[in-house]
Image 1 (cartoon, rainbow, N blue to C red):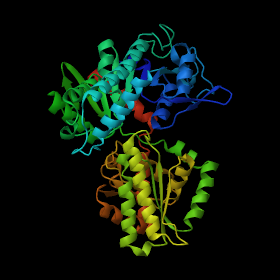
Image 2: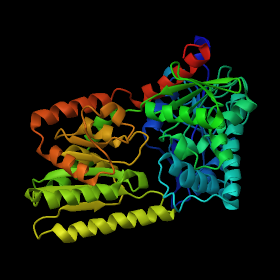
Image 3: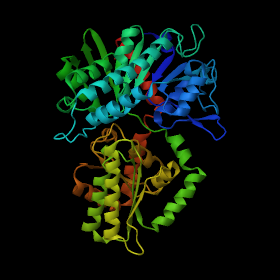
Image 4: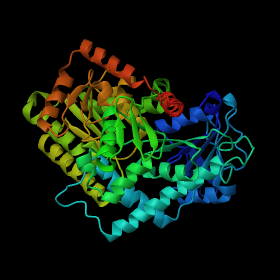
Length: 522
């Protein structure tokens, strides 16, 4: 594909979109921009090219907004989300001549629940993060077969919407309109494990369309991946191989995907050229390590609400050293072992009594799943045990907060002496990248070797085996006693690595890799 093709519209698909709606007391819909690096990166692209973002309507307010707009298509400004749902031509993004819109799919509630909760979050997520207690789980029977069919329907809805948009149909700007999805040379970039079947389905409908898929999770090695029913395991791999380019956050996850394709499908893997050939189609494999927009993060961390919370945390600490962790209460984040390591630090290093405090911000996640509710309870039980065992009238050794407060999280980044990031398995982990950029105290980073971020940060972080509680406790002590010059050097290296691939560059890199693959360069 030549340069002209690169000017074609970009179609993005993800479960969660860049905009969400709420219903006010007056019955009026209001919209706000979604968070996260992917949203920031793609909104930058939206100001430079025609873009249509296809996502699911996740709430009643989202569904109301989608139904109120012609064909569910909502105008999106490349810099700010409109205060109200507005429909019509996507002409808002004037910077660079781009136009952008969001197409929210009103997927039936039972289909969405089965696809998102039962399959994506309770099966595929568990496989890729290797979370199953295998003597007891999983067990695939008729119920899962029915849920898998709903997962197919959910993916098919996205594939059909993308195919129609690329053809100038529903949800696009209309043939010849110049809006997103109306021109030749369109590229579709499909995001994450929720939509792993979409590339193959889309390629079947639109073989002329250039397609990429990006996995934000780890990828399981073949022996663990085989936990899935054989046909399901094949279908997921074949789905992603429908893309022309498949992207991953680090080489380890890309290699695991290639290993699965080779072992389970019998695909031909060219490791030197990073290509997989299967049934006459070639898929390029790429590594695109998502980083942080350092300027944007630094600016946000300097806002008054963050400064206020920093003052509160500083007063709470009372001059003590701070060990900080910030996570969703997600099984793979390994919060319980992290608390156990802090407890061991206090047991084996009594010199820290009264001189250190652990701030653990563990925000709720997937509370509709029983495993997550139990894990949250386990966090609370161990936190209470540590408090009962070590607290004194003038020393609170552990503060756990479960209410989500982004400004407070940024303040904690700034205040941390040691940041603990110890997942059992993580696609990337942006917390490990964000804190060093804004740290006032040049924090030491204790990082799990099982985080994708370890591939970039391992030389400057204190690396740990996330299952080794004693080793993690020793690393926490090492971080606390590290001299200022060493902390400053390491933190500077971490910050430089973290900001090397900001979201806009990360996404542009995927598009360039897609074009290079089709040109025969990749």
